[in-house]
Image (cartoon, rainbow, N blue to C red; front, side, top):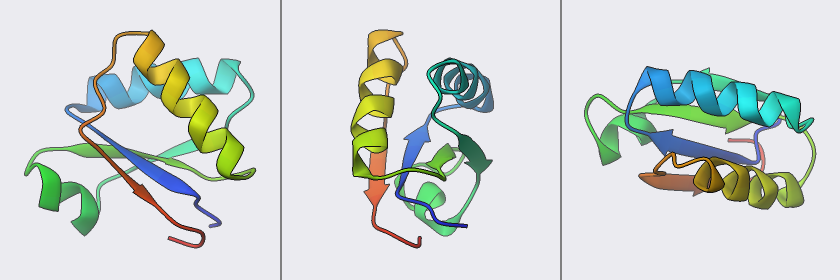
Length: 80
């Protein structure tokens, strides 16, 4: 998987909502629960942007925040 960033969200419900919003915008993601997610918040879930480039991470962040979903943390880097 070529992941460019992981957005840590507070619940699986927010992950599912963000996943739908981003898919509608042509940004493909995958829900994750990794060590990076649990470091920030024990019950947190993440949404990995799995295609495209850094621009997709920036677009994804804007879409998530514009729809009232709070991002707890962002882990960035190619090939996460």
